[in-house]
Length: 233
Image (cartoon, rainbow, N blue to C red; front, side, top):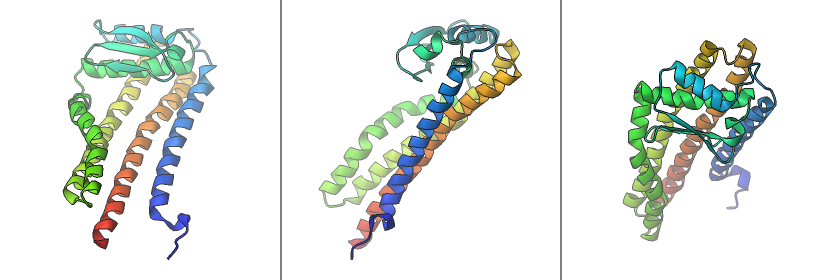
C-alpha cells in the first residue's frame, strides 16, 4: 500500500534533524554577524582580549595565533595553541572578543584540569575510531543479509559519538561562563556589551545542543530502520 512521504516516520526523522542543524548554523552566524559590526568601548581586538585574559588567569604557556576561515577558532590542549579565526583575531567587535574569550575559557579549563574537559580529551581516540567504523560496519551487515551483529556494532559506534557530544556540552557551557566572568573582571566589556556577548556565546553553544539532538535522531532512525527490517524477517 502506497504511503505518502509525509506519513513516513523515516522522512520526518531526517527532515527534523536537517532542520535543527540548519537552524543552529543560521542562528550562530546571524548572531555573530549582528555584533560583528559593534565595536567594544575599549577598542580591544580578539587577540588582545585573549592575551589579557590569559595574563589575568596566570597562564603563560599558551600561544595565540591567527587561523584562516570563519568561526574556526579553537584551543588545542596538546600543543597549548589558541587559534583565532581572521574575523576574530584583528577585530574589535563584541562578537570577536566574546569568541576569543570563550577559547581562552578552554585554556583555563586545561590549566585547572577541569574534569569534563580531561574526560572529553580521553574520549577523542575512541570517538574517531567509532565515527570511522560506524557506516562500514552497517554496510557490511547489509551485505551479509542484515547481519545484526555488524549492524548493532555500527549503531554502537554512532552512540560513542553521541556520548562525546554529551560530554562536550558542559565543557562548552563552562567555557562560555568563564569567558563572561573574565570579560567582566578585566573590564574588557561593560555590562551592556556583556549582555550582547552572552547572546553570541549562547548562540554558539546551541550548535552543540543541536548536534546532540541530531545524533539522537540519527541513532533513532537507524534503530527504527533496522528494527523494522528485523521484525519483517
